[in-house]
Image (cartoon, rainbow, N blue to C red; front, side):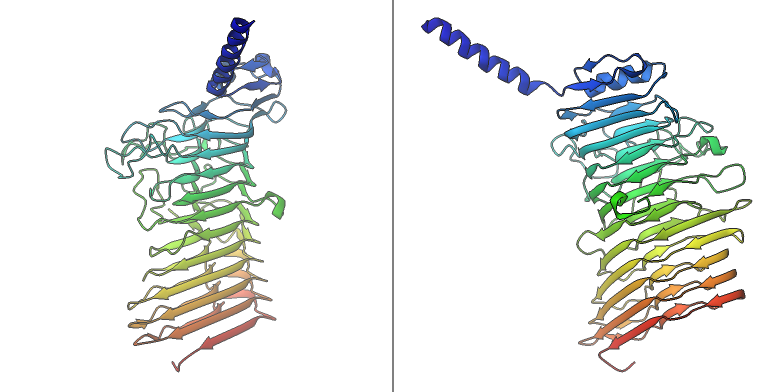
Length: 467
């Protein structure tokens, strides 16, 4: 009996240790010929990539895993509107794999040209043991993206995908860390500046259009999200991307910030740290998101930015940046912008309404950087920036704060300009030898427009000294 009990005890301990070392259990709905179970998410995705998609597929990870080293989960399968592909966690944490040195496209999940794929309900995190070198040279080992959406070729984009209800945490000390990165201008082997100069999408089919980013919590990153696409034309038009949906139930929460400009070769926008950044982002939706800076920044920063490589041509679109809550804190002497629509065209529509912005600026040196709540001074058929609430808290202790402070600017060509029912408060304080000499403009709607409305706005200006 004693020997039997010892055997039973050893067997139980061995079984427990075996279960503890399993990297994850994966179940599927057996769609498109997949097996009912796999020993790891990596194996299930390998099978998915090899399958002929004839029915919806659902892959569920019930444990935790470390992503494959070097490649991450590399997804090339393509679904359809009827036969969708869902990869989901169940209280599952995915840790980035060990990255090789000098990479610039390392990601935990990579959707490469795939369509109708959903990635949801994961906690995605940097590998703080294996990936520790933040220098942006040949020795760098950090993870660039929690989720990477990238086209497979110039004519095969990753479209109609959904990234939702994930928690993504990387490393904000790395200036190229992005929670969710989408590019139709690069390749997955994009390792050094210049290699992606011919990788731009050459047709709308090659763009990453129609993707939905809902309900994610992203923190400890230099950029919350970045979308990079070629110049907008009638034949190459990346559009229909939706960040935040139509209510708070699908909103994203982003906390971002890094005081070193990105050096990644895929960052065609040359953007400094930002919450949501588009390059050539006409015709997309960003609503109901909460965006905060990490601590205090000292670099040029825009919470939501459309950075234009060139003016759109030959298209009609609506760009909507509305219902967002933004808090920015900056101690530098640089330009600060809450929302920037980036570019325009006479057939475009700009909507920037119902946003709640707080911009805190504290400087201890002479500062000529401009501060703007909403910058929408671009060509449009209709430009509406109404019902926004903005609070600017600015202080200067040494030298002059000489940069202009503007609540909303819609100055520029437009047929109909509307800036109604905004509530703008500008608090400025000078102390010590600090003075504030910059222009203060609540709403700038100067333009040659057919119709310009600026009605029922509330403007409060508080100053502790005489200008």
